[in-house]
Image (cartoon, rainbow, N blue to C red):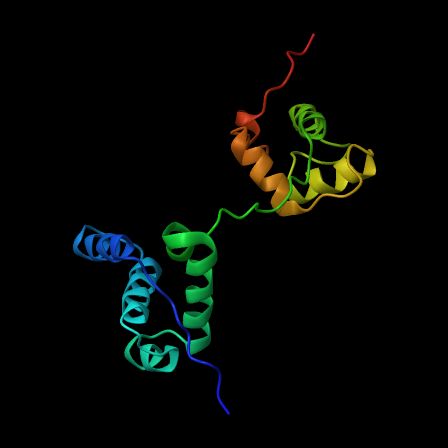
Length: 158
């Protein structure tokens, strides 16, 4: 016994919008595939049959149909914005690391390296923990290259 057929009623106005979208300019491939699938579902084609004509699984087509019923055309075609990863360092921690890099390197070192900055930031308890990549991106955003001595801001000798 298979799944019950997916009965999706795509309004005439939405079908017009879908055709207009397909005839229009450049679109993301996934949006075009979703539009084609919705048009086929509007013609009462089953999800497995749509999956045979498009490179999309029948389960994805079913989810697309349910998303159309819940959120409409925009919700079915386009994905919601994702939140992304949380910031690892707050602004105060970033400022303390930048200030540390602008000062002289530790005793016995000629210059700062990304690895050394990460180790010293934890050692000096500026941050609980920090990775080398986080430090690298922080320095990149502030246009600092401490491994090249000439780019680091240093105080004048007195």
